[in-house]
Image (tube, rainbow, N blue to C red; front, side, top):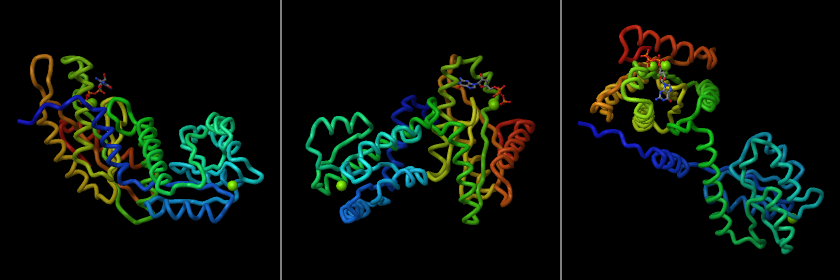
Length: 312
Ligand code: GH3
Ligand code: MG
Ligand code: MG
Ligand code: MG
């Protein structure tokens, strides 16, 4: 008999993000008017496994940020024409860059200026000349925390999965990638069966626990590269890259069996819940909407055929 689902979900998803972060390559934007220094920092960070973009002309930093959002900006303070502190202030005016860590590299001794730099958007000061070990450690810690924070902000608060908006963004990106690489991609939409009855019988708090239990099951039994979202109330979506609809259906069916055998503590003792799922595979000339519609139609067929099943 399987153990009841535990409730300590926050620790669970923070772990999940941490393990993702452990594998992540942080992308760093280095802004320093001295090209030799900038390259020295870049080399050090690249050796530590990070992806580094160097901008020696600070007026081009905004351009670089428009092209891609890095995990962190490492920036000189004293530069001709553009002042690093002023640049940080401008960067902070963009909503998307509100939580982007900005670390200053500076020989600035004036504590009033240092304070101003923090006030206008800087997160840290690394004194020049820079201790390169310290640079790597600080950049990594800052980038890691910023990523975790962003992941939590973009996730559904009940389950820690991607929220609806973020899932759809990822769907568009992954479809694009699959097309470029000539790979298959499958979408599953998963809906709990007779969930209204679960709430009515056991109450909403128990219902919430079931929703978290399914989130946990999906995370545990899908691959790390699969993308999972809470699509609606008791509805989930999973994106399986490099997976045919047949393979995706087989996988969701195995998870369905396990999940359906998982007991939850109910008002009158243990009970279990089932789900239905619809699967669709991407077609070369169709966009995200067509894929969602096809998976939805398959889900509807699974419901009509009696629930507790996976259709494609
Ligand atoms: P079906 O098998 O056809 O899917 O039946 P169902 O009862 O699951 O479907 P329906 O869409 O009629 O009901 C979904 C229910 O899910 C209604 C709503 O109260 C419940 N629900 C939605 N979001 C949450 C949530 O966050 N927590 C809880 N506890 N219940 C939720
Ligand atoms: Mg300088
Ligand atoms: Mg339902
Ligand atoms: Mg539903």
